[in-house]
Length: 145
Ligand SMILES: Cc1cc2nc3c(=O)[nH]c(=O)nc-3n(C[C@H](O)[C@H](O)[C@H](O)COP(=O)(O)O)c2cc1C
Picture 1 (spheres, rainbow, N blue to C red):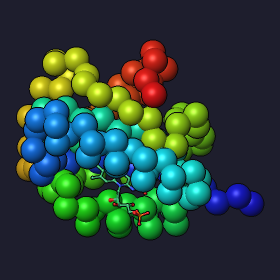
Picture 2: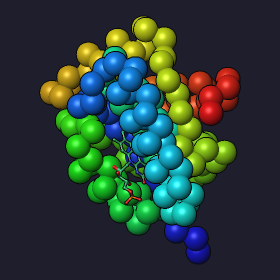
Picture 3: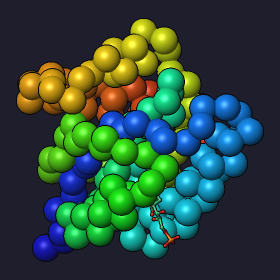
Picture 4: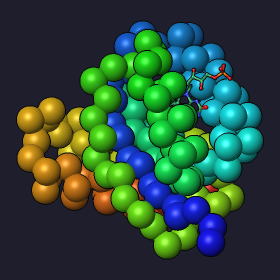
């Protein structure tokens, strides 16, 4: 029997300076590393950056996700990593992207995520996790990279 698939959704605060000269090369580097490693580990997903924070969806087996997420969590380019979802899924929705890039999202959605405090209760986190998952997928289908 094949190993079961999971998805992980998190939100984190970027520690890198929020100006294009720092941001662009840093994000390009993160994406290049992610795509190389994720293709090897059979991880798919998407990354968003907005108003100083990241949101990321990762899909893969538990083993692959945990190894990858352990590295991500230790990365000093962000902190205050808050897991919003970590559950079993029947299939991948980001199957075409080893790490899809979603730049800015609509201000309304961005504000909703930005105000999600670390003290948010479980239900609020779950709702935010599902919204991010759906939003990133929609944005990539509409023409992400
Ligand atoms: C917001 C963010 C998202 C990242 N996403 C991934 C990822 O999906 N896969 C990955 O391998 N590394 C990711 N990284 C990079 C890892 O933290 C780490 O630098 C990298 O996996 C090290 O890989 P290397 O040993 O091949 O250089 C991410 C880093 C940040 C800051």
